Length: 577
Image (cartoon, rainbow, N blue to C red; front, side, top):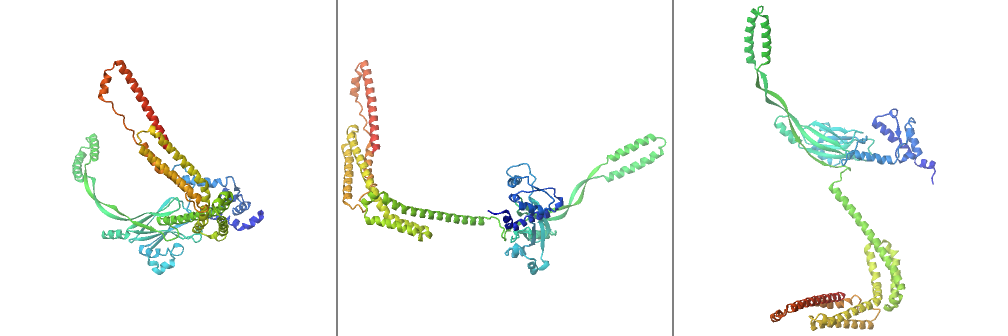
């Protein structure tokens, strides 16, 4: 057990760190403590009183710490809501949660020839070249651009475009800017690009006496916080003069009308006092005619902007420690996993070999005791003592040299231990196995003899020679058994047996083959009655003929039933063999 005071003393350096994230969050959000309305505590550490005290001190004691949420479930629930927001598999109501970029990201542009020389070094210290190195190579005369495209705290899932005028291919570096938030030792280089096609496009435009291309590079900070160059193009605007047809008023016709109207007006002035009403009408007609002026089509020249757009070629690579999971790295990782899996397999095989080896030591000892009577019959005292000694030596070796032995060594030692023991135990097992096999063989041979005797009446189409062939094979098998039994009785019981129980059943294979062939032999077809018998049957009376037909049908049915029964019995006897 440990006291709270001792616990707080041990963790004092960790408790001091509780206030730093608060200060960093306020600074990032550009908010002061006076602007906060409430504070809610989440996370497992909120239960520690000293942590609560440290947080309260960091807040200046102005705000009460809220502990209304389940500190563990709230973390998982927030992650679930964020996953629902960014998911593309299903659509849910958006929950007010925005993820931000924790580190500022910048873009450095240089001439492609310079970038190729620098990329081998990985960008210098922390993945970026020092300013001193650039000064040595050309000072301020070298073309270079630097821009922070995604600032600290910017939202994820946005795109930004930078534009500049240049007539050569460029090298683009996407880097983290040095920041206090960036973990110490983190490489600054994220990804580098070679953007080509600008020089070729600029040359084409120069041949047309046009200006320098304007290059646009679009970057995306996706929902996972990964920055990539997603679009690169060059644009040149050209001012061209085009001819267009427009509708204008007919000026010649208008001049003629004006002269006629002037003369008419002079005449009307003389008669103005006499005819005032007529003058009013003439003015109205004049206005109507003006509205009905004729129009004509005229060709004019206008200036218009024409854009020449060229998509640029982009090749990306990585030089820092931050790299994507490429096919090469995937193959390397799989090779490592396969190697680890092989080591695990070899370890398990070694453990199994050890268990098998140790188990066989106890098997020898138990067998010599449990089957002592049978083993004494087929082994000498020297053989049994050798087995006991080998078991003891194996046990001593296992807990000494065998502790660090490999798999092959254990397999060799197992063979050395089991080979003499298996011979003794096999002879003991054969003491009971051989008589059982001989008994089963004798019973089978007796059944074959009975079957041949039965076939004399039931299967008359089997000749005497064929049945005798089977009986001869039966006698050969009986003779083989008698000879082997006699040899085994004369042989040394402590040596290898003359024959084994596995050899006995094989003596009936030839017999079974012959019997199976004879059972498939077809019976001869019955002979047909001749025409003389048929004519004699026609002279019989109608009643006698009908009665004879019925009897013949019954006899035929009876004969067929007997034949089927006999065939079934014969098949059953053959299966038993």
